[in-house]
Image: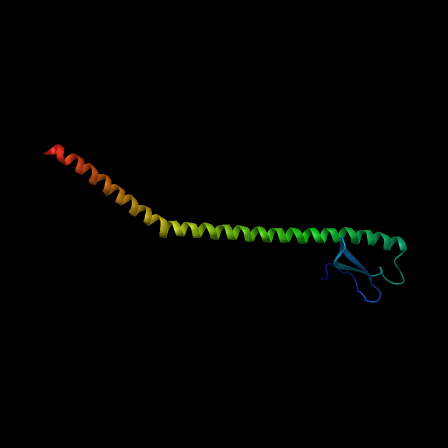
Length: 122
């Protein structure tokens, strides 16, 4: 993946620095000389190597953050689907069953009171 470029980048002239996190290579940084006969000095290479180490850590962090956000999205979706399923189960299954039980309990209570009151009325 090319992130930034200026001028022409010749593959044989480019300095390739691995972008590493711990011992895993996450990408490769290609650096071409600034132009003309200008070459990279050993100090430039040391500085770029240190920079490549920091970039590797940053790339790994960005990837972890992206993975975490994607996992959170899946978790939220799964939670919402479970809530919809429970709501549907309550509405279609348990709700009518509880209503029927309450109607039967009410009928039993009324029948019991009626049978207790009947001898008193006569």
